[in-house]
Image 1: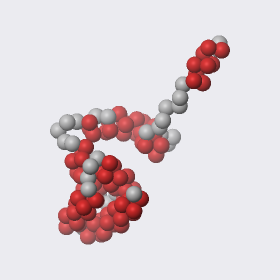
Image 2: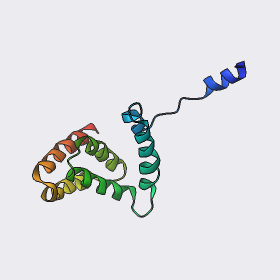
Image 3: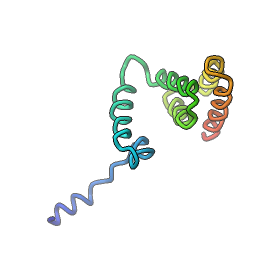
Length: 118
């Protein structure tokens, strides 16, 4: 390897890992790639729903499915995508009647933790 090649390689900044790569890239690299490529770079970029609306739908689904780990990160993302805390709390309240009271109560605890981060 020439000095120029070595200098070029060392001058290139390390590529920052996506959240999917951080969470599962070392164990399930294909799933991380699909998460980035299909879910976030295709589905989340479609124009038929805004990212705000996609966050609301996703939060609702995660409450209904009782997926607390993913709910936590999607409440954060929902806030970044323009959802208000009050909208998230109202969604949780509404979903408690459709997905079960325990799912709603668990979601409130998660939302409370996320809201306290700010």
